[in-house]
Amino acid sequence: MYQQPTVPTAVPATPKLELKIKCKGLADLDVFSKSDPQCFIFMMDPKTRTWCKEPIGKTEMVLNKLDCEFVKNIVIDYRFETIQPIRLTVVDVDDMNNPLWSAQELIGHFDTEVGKIVGSRGRTLAGRLEHPQYRNSHRGTVIVSAEEQSQSKRVIKFNIEATKLAKKGLFSSDPSSFFVIHRASENGVFAPIYKSPVVRSKSNPIWSEFSIKEIELCNGDPNRQLKIEVMKHKGNGPEHTTIGRTQVFTFEELLGSRMPKYFPLSPKPAGTELLIRRMVVTEPPSFLDYLAGGVPLNLVVAIDFTQSNGDPRHPQSLHYKSPSGENDYTRAIRSVGNILQCYDTDKKFPVYGFGGRVNGQVSHCFALNGNPQYPEVDGIEGILAAYWHALQFAELYGPTNFSPVINQTAAICNQHRSGDLEEYHVLLILTDGVITDMDNTVRAIIEASRLPLSIIIVGVGNANFDNMNVLDADDEPLRANGKVMARDIVQFVPFRDFQSGSFANEDLAEAVLAEVPEQFVQYMTQNRIQPRAPPRADTMVAMNNGNMAYTPMQSPHLASSHISNGTNGYGSPSMSSSFAGGSISMSPQLVPDRLSYMSKR
Figure 1 (cartoon, rainbow, N blue to C red):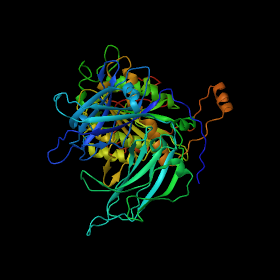
Figure 2: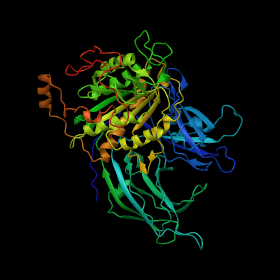
Figure 3: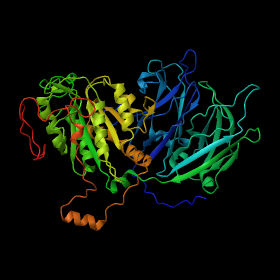
Figure 4: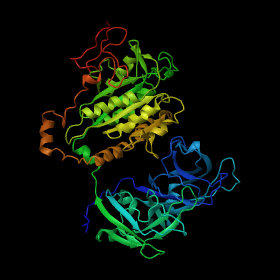
């Protein structure tokens, strides 16, 4: 029997709302089947009073349904003191390989305000979908319900099976099946919250172990009613049939029960049962728990030196230094770097360029400070200084390849792993165009997903970045050569969406860093790494009095074995220890005294 601990939880300054969405009577836009709906949620930019280009959340896609209830909830911040316009956009998915809503066929929008949803009876609001070009046509209805989200951190792991699932028809084979967990809302209406994978052709299916957060299962209320429905899977058909449902139960009842817990499924036949074979409740450590234990976040920067950026001497170039001393590359580096440097113990950052020609050789991973054996610079200003100097001596070339810098960062990650202490890395890639080594990049990301690494890609300029969203892997994990990524580690944003407004830099940092804490914790959890105890207060006082910084482990430098024979260790030409054009005088902040630039032979 599980003994439930009593842990006080802090009330967040900004409450979270969980939005549950369903649709009724959608327009049928497909010829030979029914629409495949998906819903995207947009907020309005309070500064420009226009809808943000990037959605704050999206549901899953449902095949061949004009009446549907989405399983995935959308979580948003709720601010009572402000008007929060919100747009629900429902599309018919025609291109399943493209995650962008704009690549699908629009069914319609419903515009409202968060306050209207919360203030509606039962916190549920229905609205008519409208198409901007077909205002008088019937597009269907969207229904959105809101519930304040609990702050519980607990996670529940389940093993669920079923027995004696009925066949249908005299010559039918054992059914392919899945199950759906439903949760009652505050007003007693049940809605789906989890859908299992399909088990093929088994009368006694054993579904894969899965984990679900307590806030998703019961929103922190152990007495919230639940039920499980077992469904017969019908391929891509519009209607899956119900095999049976459990009686209503609560998480509190499961906590007080012995496992396995048996539930008869109704309607009969008799003997058809669902059983929860095993249930484990844990409270995983938080992102802050790991930081308190001294795990640093190390920033690695990679900058696009391809020809498509334009000649840096011309104002039209993305690398042009404006009278203010900035460009989009430097603004993106500052906005993201200023946050991450707070969590880096030594403030030393490896900085690379890719797609440039140095000393007559094209390289897709060269050290911007000119020293491949020690590519680190001091602080954000060191990154910017290395960038401006490199533009004087590295020729813009091409093509745009990401895999070498990802592999190089993976090598750094592996060198910094020692015993029970992990150092986490964030690779910031700034690029002006679509990558040309997509297959190699996918393979590199899949391998890197098993390392303590997150990858942030910022698209600079006005290129078409649609293919970048494939790497984001929010909907489907990346696959290549029979391997699947261990976790989602990539976040992509186009810089052009954050160029207006007085808080543009802060908004960009928020967008690109939002997923890092969850990716960080997911890595630690998957590898069963627990946070270390924070340093004792008296130790910290002694350090501060002696002007010492708390550094749990000194970061080893990149070994020279990875930079040899003119390559970066992955088959890509690497920069030698001098730029073309002779020796360069650099500030001590950029290159340590014991290392200097060598003049051209």
